[in-house]
Length: 84
Image 1 (cartoon, rainbow, N blue to C red):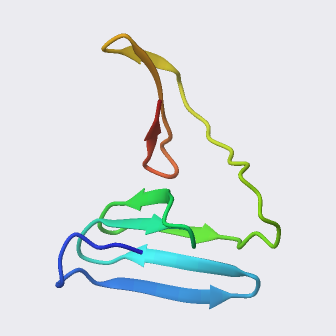
Image 2 (cartoon, rainbow, N blue to C red):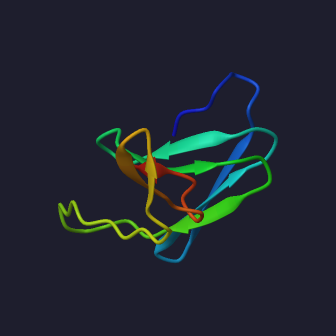
């Protein structure tokens, strides 16, 4: 996880086979073990993550594809990320 500053409060809880990440007072970026962003949480949001046991590069995102500046982008409301 990477926080924007030293005063950001984040809670990480283990719930069975899942990890729950909560951004308490500021936004936080969640990355996988390779440093690839997997979510961006705004203050007050929580997401549950299930660690992958395989070295998989498969991700699922849901959203509406739009064209911005000549490029197709997909904003994902759940993860808070936008991919090109």
